[in-house]
Amino acid sequence: MNQEEIITRAKSKTSKLVTFGMPKFGTSIIMGFADFALFALYVLGYQLTPFLVGIALGLGKLTIATSQFFFGWISDAKYTRWGR
Image 1 (spheres, rainbow, N blue to C red):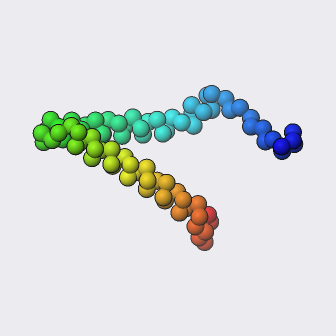
Image 2 (cartoon, helix red, strand yellow; image 1 turned 180 degrees about the horizontal axis):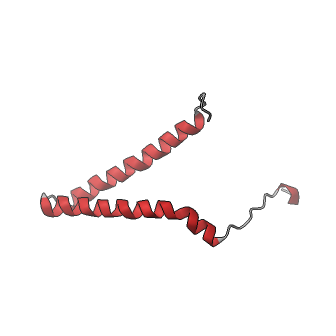
Image 3 (tube, rainbow, N blue to C red; image 1 turned 30 degrees about the vertical axis):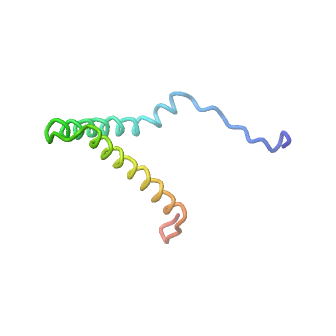
């Protein structure tokens, strides 16, 4: 690879990166509170074992991650009359 083939990337400002990431951070905090509340409800309220509750909540997060990947892949690969 010679010098012309190397693609240089401009360094983004930290403030721009923080501003871009704030909505995701807010939703993550709220979802963390919801998961904690569900964990407390199932363990303290319904007397389930913490291990099983952790497995169930972990499987829920894994399902969310898998579906986001899958539907993102579909939306990127599908062409409709409304655009890509």
